[in-house]
Image (cartoon, rainbow, N blue to C red; front, side):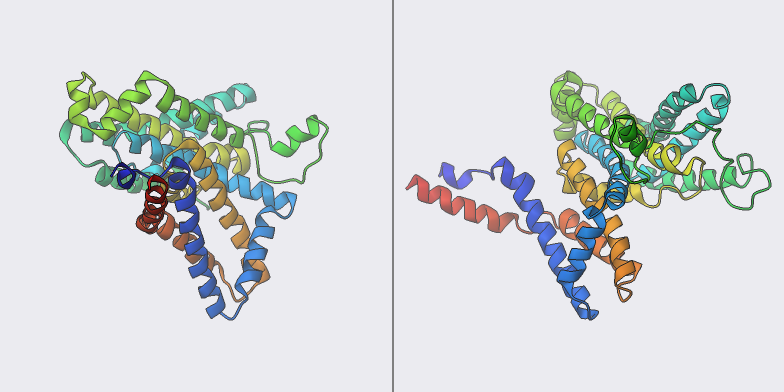
Length: 369
C-alpha cells in the first residue's frame, strides 16, 4: 500500500517530466515544419547550430536567456508566496525608467557611480511598481492578477508619454531617450575575456548575465536557507497556518511582491545598460510574459529557471538563424514553436504525470513483491 502511495522521485519530477513535455512540443513543431515542406531534422540541426554552433550565436543565446532569468525569478518568488505576478512587463518598464533616471542624474559626474545607482534604481522602481498591487491584494482583497495586468498597461502608457515628452531625445522623432553618457554601461563579456587573455567574438552578452546568476543564487538562498524564505513559503502553502504561527500574511505578501518586482525591474540592466544604452519604448519585447513559462517550466526553482531560460534563449537565437536559412519558415512560425513549448511545458505540464506515475508505481510494487 505504501508503495502505491509513493510520489515521483525528485529527479523524475524535475527532469524527466519537463523533458517529455519538451520532446512533445518539438514533435508537434516538427510536424508543422514537415507540413511546410521542410525537413524537421534539418530545421532542428539549424536551430541548434544557430544557438550553440559559433561564438556569436552562443553570446546571443545567453543574452536572451539573461532576460528570462530575471523575469522567471520574479514570477517564482511571487509564486512561492502564493501570488501570481503577471506584471513583469510593467515592472521591467518602470525598472528601465529608474535605471535611466539614475544614469542621467550622475552619469556625467561618475560613470561607475551611475552604473551602481542604475542597478539600484532598476530594482527600486520595479519593486515600487509592484508595491501598489501587493498592497491592494493584502489590504483591500483586490486580486493581484487583475491589478498587475492593469499596471502593465499603465506602465506602457506612462513610458510612452515620457519618451515623446520630457525624456525624448532632443530633435528626435522616435519614442526613445537621449544616449547614455560615455562610459555608462555594463562591460561586455568579450572585453572581460580579453582582460583575462582570451579572445571571444563580439556580441551583446554583458555583465548583467553574471548579475542574473547571482540573483538566482540569492533567491535560492533566501527561499531555502533563511527564516524569511521559510515563512514566505508557509504563506504560499497555507495562509491560515501562517497566521496561526504568527506570520504576518500582509507583510509577507507586500515584501514578496516587491522582491518580485525588483527582479523584473532588473531586466533593463541587460537590454538598456548592456546593449541599447538608451531608454526605448518597447525594450521589454514580451520577456515579462515569457518569464511566466520559464518559471513554471523550471518548476519555480532557481536552477530550473536558469536552465529553462537557456532553452528559451536558444529558441530565440536558433529560431532567428532558422528563419534566415529556411525562407519558407518565417519568423511567425518560430513564435509558433515557442508557443508550443510554452503550451506543453507550462499549461500542459502534467500531461505525462499520470502515465509516468503508473510506471514508477508498477516498478515499486514489483520490487515490494
